[in-house]
Image (tube, rainbow, N blue to C red; front, side, top):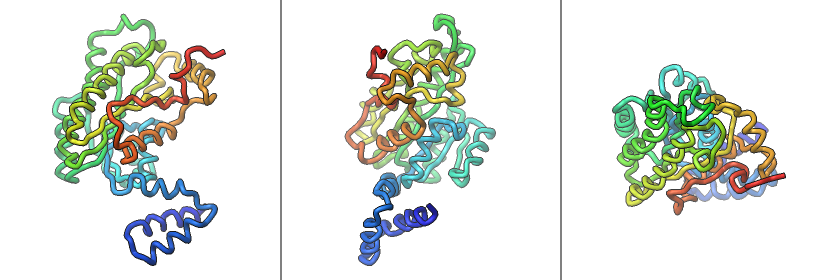
Length: 298
């Protein structure tokens, strides 16, 4: 395994230029039966791209699954954290301990414009943004939707939906060569999911925003998409009443007979952020092991 890791690292070195000797050595390495071509694809897929990850709370976050795949595929990553406590949690993750982390509380006026101004000053440009931010008072993620309070509705839609619109507006200025912006949704935006309540309504608004923003930003060669991920146990999802029952139900009706994983979502997001998805924008891509395609399953 250690030799394999060294060879993959060496492949990165060989891919850096067109030197004839290096290319010959590359051909030899590619002929090794136990060196899988997926290693080569991972090295190349996001090589030379820099992007921003917003909303990674810890190693159990969906954003962690996305960031880890992007990192393995060669991306240079920048992160945001709501406050110093969450910033330290990112530094505690071995894979990202040397990454730059900006503090950005998206609920605060001017926080997002200030973030992208600083990114522009430090880096000049970026290639992609992952928006993985959502919030609701967990007391309102149970019971009836009509019991949603005005204060929570306004706060939740500001953080979970409007922040994405503002991120897209500001990201445009640091994507002079185009890019890709991605957010995360859930099936509760389309159909009623018990206890998801206000977040289902807000995710619907988020998905509509994706389509409008894709239309607005297309002229700048900026693609905007969302991934509708199946249920995954995270800090955020643990606040939804009866979430363990949702996991069990989805596993039982999935065509793949399992729940989706963070790695599944990370791979799909990496594809959408890469040049391989250059013709895809305004889409809501389901990554849920096929659950959205099933009506009734016995």
